[in-house]
Length: 389
Image 1 (cartoon, rainbow, N blue to C red):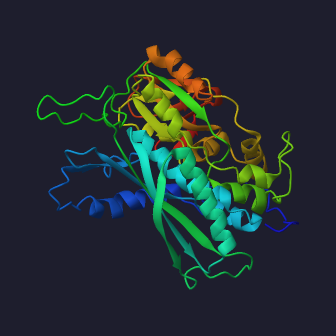
Image 2 (cartoon, rainbow, N blue to C red):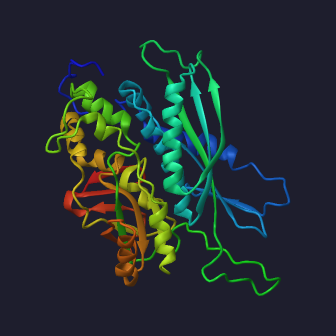
């Protein structure tokens, strides 16, 4: 964004105006791509089943008895890449690439094992690749995984750079995890084969359960098209501006890496707590909780205040809470749904590893998978919030 950018006319920012039509994306996938992909079948006798495509859950599970079920996921970094390029600071997006993938894997109860990265670029810049690789390493250290390989594709004709500056590139990862042996090293009655942790899909969630929220570090790597539109195109700001009440430069707030929640999830399992469901709060904001399988609803009645960067985006872009909470994590990067009786033990287990979890809501018996935020007068289903009444 130019240092002296001129703001657009006084109209609210929307995700569509920023170049992202989530409703059309979901419709296109559901109507056009999913019917074809759902018809694919594994021919190998080693695989007994694959679950995940039809459910829209966070990761896919592939069963290969007698070994552990494998969990698979893939994700990228999105338009946060454009800010990394402008700021010439690439390390954070390497962390983001790892975090986006492993945070999805743990939602099904898997332990992340490895990730392969894919970098598509218009030209090779060794200093840029060094920073990205360092970020991938830092993310892998936090997640406890290996990155045994990857791919660099030079596709300059597809990534034409008309604006000058550093290389244009995209960064994507594909990760694999596995369900570990059940607690206590249980074995099946026949053959002595190990029993593995039961996969999570949220079907165990029931009314009366409580929701623990784990704090985010900021935007993570979601909603950046809208954030850039609100702050720069409409708001006339630059990366060197300060975020009010923080003393932080905008570039530092926006390039804060995504948090990795692997240790937090494993701390709960190690404490003998079986989550009923887990949700990575990424694209889709807090509506992601409703991706859990149970036909219930979620009331977020004690959300903590969001970081100042979110208020700045809303103010500069004239964006209402309905759009903000359907786009950004608003300070909560991961949610765990557990039985109410497990609340205090869970919070204690999290605090022992330095994780500041907090109860943010509860599960209701209302059918339809809605998510409500009473303090803001919002209720939502699918990919949109609306004001109640």
